[in-house]
Length: 172
Image 1: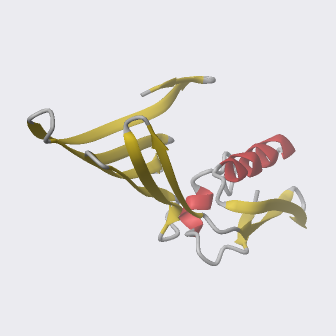
Image 2: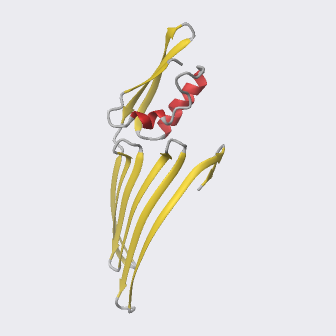
Image 3: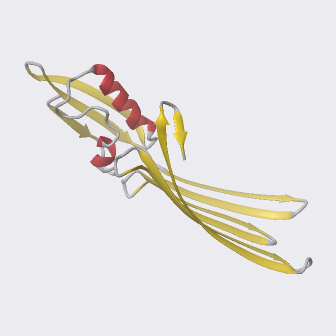
């Protein structure tokens, strides 16, 4: 492989895409490695389409053009309900390609008549381009039950990692 060109990425950093490639410039060309690389890029779920084209540069040299079509990666949802324990309102905001760096950032908020629960989360699915995911979250929960005579608050923080130890076996 003489050169790999990444085309069509206006928001996403090129390093995010190159971090998913299983083949690099200077490696022996195999169509299977290109197809696996395209599948890895598509699996990130931040592109609508990922296509590739192989061009002959010179004798035994190939130029690979990978064309990506970006898609909106933000999500927002809201819900409300009523039940035996009272009413509930919830909202969730999520961005799956924060600042074009391929990182996930989310905010969840749930409000009931007796409690408020909020969580902020951050996930880097390819930390330092090693294939390991690193995630952080901060959560706070406040309960106020005056008819039962207590009020409490719980604040927690979480730091974690996950990675593929063997094929299709993940540790976290």
